[in-house]
Length: 145
Image (tube, rainbow, N blue to C red; front, side):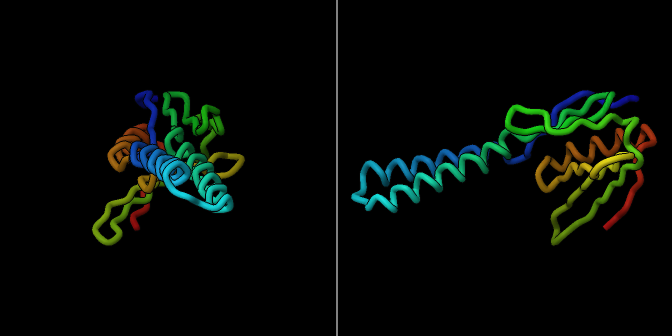
């Protein structure tokens, strides 16, 4: 199969990471420079923890594409791997919503739940490039929305 090995990451992972740092900085600023009751300080700490978990998910989210298959993971762990031979069908859904193009590749394995690679999180160009490779390999059905 002629699929180029690469790793796809969230298109806005820098935005997610910097947002987490800004939340932590704001909480630290308030804790150090403001006279706050303890309940507000603990609320800020809880907000920082929640923001850190949320941001780290998107910063570490990745799809490893190889000639053998696709591996989905986050937080330094491999969550799921699908071999191309284990995929029953693959759908491509492309569209335009209020002037914003979108592209979704859904991989339907013979057993288990589908895996979707979407331009909602990943770069549109990366998803479309993968779709072209899957199409040339004969693994793709197209559905326009």
